[in-house]
Image 1: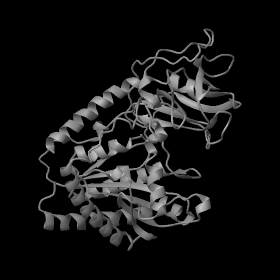
Image 2: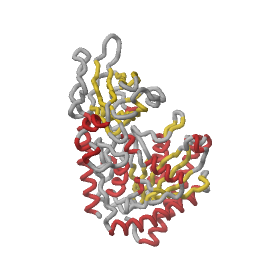
Image 3: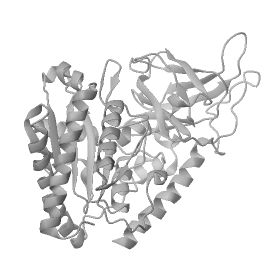
Image 4: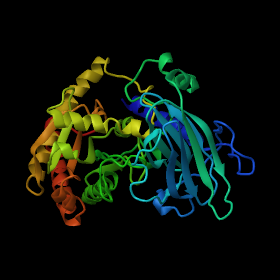
Length: 446
């Protein structure tokens, strides 16, 4: 297991370095030169960053974005304060167009990208790694990128990134894809993509070799970057759970009993499998993923915190819906799912999973008992479903939905520091109880 963990760390480092090259491309034509059909450029290097876009005034600023056109031809325009480099490419099943750009400070109006126009059903944008941002368009059908270029500032108008989409038939669309992403050349994978995005955020990890025998806990604030998660008004799930996760980290570290690693500590997107790799590569003793759910209006109202463990069969329809939604996070950001290793055939892995599930279920029950004394819980507080982020075979894992942003009362709690302090306190108490019992029954922790 130690060798396997080292291998994963080295692999993560290599993939992260390779991904950094995605965001560098040859300069697009100026307004004077005119656009070239289908222009997208090969890679050079992109600026590095250690903070989120919102805290980085030196990054390019995007001040406006809009769509124009109809269901035959649609144009996207992004207003910038300076010229940037970019790379644009289509993806199949579902139909999308991805635009990779250097890290940008998006200062767009609320709701930008949510309205359909022409060939575009919606688009989203955000950070996918330090130094790199991404825009993802959900298309109504197969399209080609007829033109893509950056205009110089001229006549009082700012520099602009312009993309022209044109409707094409399925055959023409598939032929325009890179060979490795053509559906007919590889097994179909639901919601799969071909974009390469960084692996484990190794900069956030402590050294693997350590004499510190304290149990290591991984805290995983869900979503981030381009993936907002659920939303209510100006409150996004990614920000709510990040604040909760950081508060939980601080409280755990204050006790001095444990080491803590965050899968993300800022507004960065981390692929689902990389969240799991962070836990496994560090030989974590516990993995806690933090989320905040929302129900579609047609499904009524729900409230309270819910604790999930992994299971091949969902405990109920709501758990199945939530797992399906959470498992699509990588597709939302255009992350490659096609080359992920499968390990379920290994009998040793299977045995480890059985023990791990036992510990996961034990911690979930302890957590429920503690949280119900301080915060409102869902009417069915313990559930299970096939969450990808909980599938580490050797790390006890739970996913905690701390509340529903779609419920007015829960949302008031989620933005309340007083409520958060109570919830964090109950979680730390459950962690203490869990490790006390585990040490007593299973020997020393990892």
